[in-house]
View 1 (tube, helix red, strand yellow):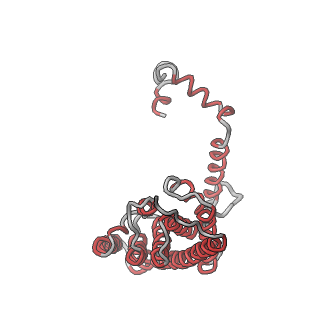
View 2 (tube, rainbow, N blue to C red):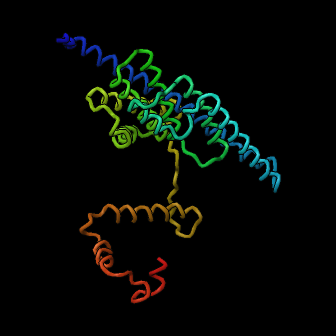
View 3 (cartoon, rainbow, N blue to C red):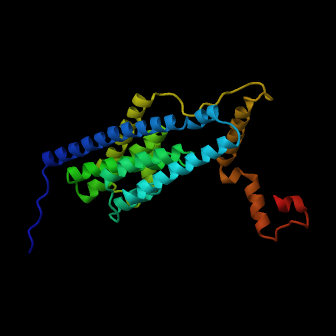
Length: 284
C-alpha cells in the first residue's frame, strides 16, 4: 500500500496562502502599470492622424494615411509571426487554454510582442479594442511569476485568472468587470477556491489603483448634456435618452412586456405580411 501524502499543517497552509495572495498583489500592480503605459502609448500614437492632417491635404493625405496603416499592420504581423505566434488574436482564448492546461503562455515573449504589436495595430487605425491585449499582458505577468515560484496547476490557473482580471480592470478602469469576466468567461477552467477568488479580487483592485495613479482618474468618454434640443451638442443627450428608454424596456420583466405576448401569438400562425399588416410590416 502506497504511503499517504502528509497534509500541510495550519501554519504551513497559512503561509502558502499568504504567499499566493502576495503574488496576486504583484500581478495586479505590475499588470496595472504595464496596462497603463500601454494606454498612454496608444493615446500618444493615435495623435498621428491629426498631425498628418495639419501637414497634408487632399488625395495625398488619404494615400499617406493608407500607407502608414499598411506599414504598421505589416510590422505587427511580422513581429507576431516571427517572435511569438501565440500572441496572435485577442488573447482571451490563449488564456482559457492555458488555464485548462492545453496551452502554454510564454510570458517573456508574449508580453513585449503584445505591447508593441498592440500599439502598432491599434495605433494604425484598425478597428480593435484594448481589452484583449491587456488581458493577455496580465496573464503573461502571472505566467512568469507562476513559473518563477513553481506553483502547482491549480494555483497557476488561479493566478492566470487573476492576471486576466487585472488586465481587464486596467483596460476599462473597472475592477468589478474584471472579476465578472473571470466568473463568466472562464467558469469552466477556473479553480473554485477561496484563495483563487480572493486573488482575482485583489489583482483587479490593485490594477485599477495603478491605472488611476499612472493615467489619472478622468473619464475616458465624456458626454456633454445640453438643454437646447436642436443644438449640435444635444445629439449626445438624444443618444443618452434613447439608451435610457431601451434599458428600461429591456429591464422589464417578461410578464409586463406587452409585445412579447403579441409576438408569441403571431408565431402560432403564418407571418401576416400581406394579409393584414401590409408590406411595411414585412419589411420591418
